[in-house]
Length: 192
Image (cartoon, rainbow, N blue to C red; front, side, top):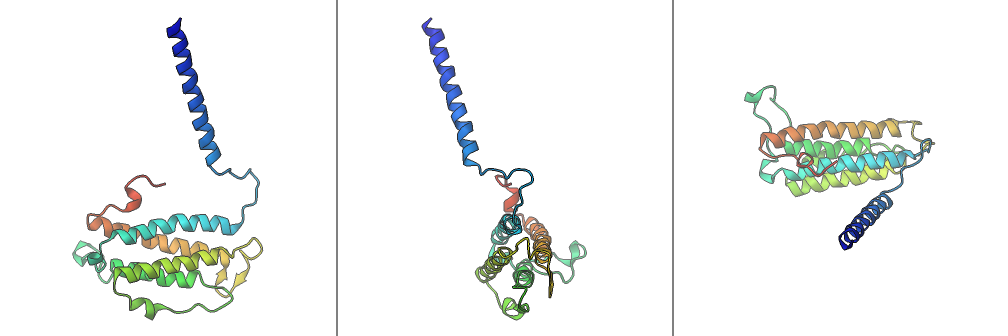
């Protein structure tokens, strides 16, 4: 009899613990909006930008500074004249300034400033600054202005193009990392 009571108590404790853990994990997760809920464009673009920015910055930080000058040799195929790893990162920092600039003002051509950057720390800082600008830009996208034509297209269109652009270069960074025996951070597990 004592044995059955002990088993019953143990099972009851396990069930309560499991139920509490499930309830806690459900309570800790943010509620999903109900089907049909209108989600502001800034929220959608902001989440996407945050997720993909992390992958890009992590990849840029994963390459050692002495490999920032790496470009695949022409002997490996069609690589003559391609950008180095550091040049890929600088290009994205520069291009983000175009894609994510205030649409009421002309884009600032910061190419010459970006080209002067030499160290990994300088390049990473410029990249992070460009993503700060990108977040400021997407935070201004509203249902009312998302698809209104500006000098360079619509705000939503430019944000989508800007994100697609830097993810295209992310793919190149991944190849350069792997060519140098480095597993990209997003491929190491524990990610999405």
